[in-house]
Amino acid sequence: MSFSAFKAPAMCAATRSALWLTASLFNTMIDEAPEELRGVKQLLTGGEALSVTHIRRALRQLPGTQLINGYGPTETTTFACCYPIPADLSESLRSIPIGRPIGNTRVYVLNRQMKPVPVGVPGELYIGGAGVARGYLNRPELTAEKFIPDPFSDRPDARLYKTGDLVRYLPDGTIEFLGRRDQQVKIRGFRIEPGEIETVLGQYGALREALVLVHENERAEKSLVAYVVPGQGQNVTAAQMRQHLKVHLPEYMIPADFIVLESLPLTPNGKLDRQALPTPESARRTVGENYVAPKLMIHHQLIAIWEELLNRQPIGITDNFFHVGGHSLLAARLVGRIEQIFGKKIALSTLFAGPTIEQLAQAIQQRIDADEGSSRAAIIAVQTGKAGQRPFFFLHGDYMGGAFYCFTLARGLGTEQPFYALEPYKFNGLRVPPTIKEIAAAHLEAMRAIQPEGPYLLGGFCNGGLMAYEMASLLRAAGQTIDMLLLIDPASPPHSTLRMAYTRICSMLGIGEDTQIDWQLRLRHIYKYLR
Image (cartoon, rainbow, N blue to C red; front, side):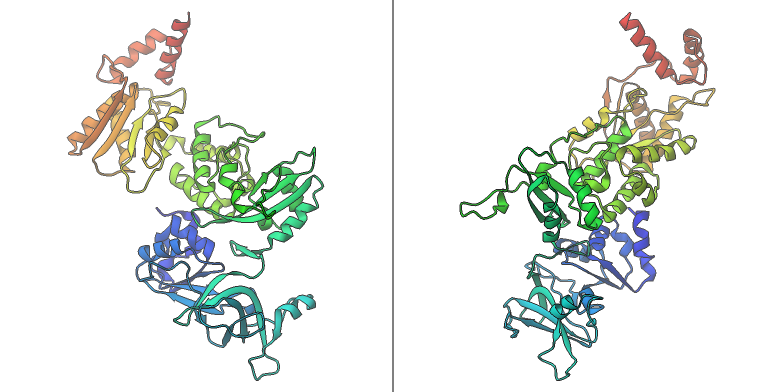
């Protein structure tokens, strides 16, 4: 599946010989649109530690592309080390090496006494050479701390940059990144000091304690989590703390999650017990006081997408995408999913302008309404499921309720099962209704756009069951196979076509020919039952 949201980063990859992507964007494209990278001869990625899982996936999906891990702090202008990743990457590898120094660059792995360490022993990485910057603008003290004279060079003006990165030499001479000597972390390419965030949180008068940690989920995505302990008698909310931080810190330093605790857990020795801290996933399962439940079918569809991307439940229709863990890369993935599910392209600016489910649904619905006359047989992806799994197509037959029950039905089949709901045929504007066979043919056209060939899994409820049966008949006549036809309480009309019964029903009920008959029949039935 090709998503327009990722075409700009790829820049027509087939015509490019080399491409650089930050590690976060690389992971996103390998997850969402790897086909956009096919044809690139050299694909360089870096900016933070690479995900071994995504590298292995890229090696499988991009044969013929040379992957390169590019390492280099901003202070060294460009790359300092590179590692061409072999296609036969060792199965025992736990991290991707940063490789060897590039031309005109010197690197040293030193201990605290500024002595080189043996192979396999951790030390701090120092970088020298033509790429080392002059220093930090208007920050002489920090410049003197980080840019030091090179004790290994004969040139008196030679300097080394003290990276703060812990590394070690591997037996083959390449360098492996191990972590940081300080508490600095990198998230989506941004350098972040959690202690700086803790200091700003400590200035918020309602808090007694604050701890900021980095959380990495199963997709190798990193985010900041703030654990806070309110002062006695104080009540704090995530919105209040987020607003306080935004006054003092840039957006990328605002934690994705704020977890309020009565106290920070400690070990018997009085040290912080990190294992006892609740994970963001477990904390997200509680419904907040500002939670607003979905009201429309499109709300349910969008919430399902958000829950998948953000790994968060529950999500309300007034929650702000960027306040519940969303960021620019996830925003691009969200736009791609919306295009996949709804067949409508929306600009990233639309999401930034209206970052809630409610606002996003309104924007999408406006696009749908604008195109309403283009197709009378609509189909909705209730659950995209697992790639390669045969989809189940279901005619819900619900004019009034918007097929809300389809979401429960789909989840009952398991999250890996793709589930598509076929909406009732649109009669509006037709003075003479089509035959059931004509309606079935229109539904088949929409269905086969998703699955061109059988075997098919097909089902329907009430009048949708009748339509599913007719569709199955047409498929068999066309030489297609139906593995399953599920009919739930199917309707059994006395006429073979709607046209034959149309005039009689309109006359009996006194309704116009441009009205959807099903609505009137249901309302009349309910009225008689209640009376």
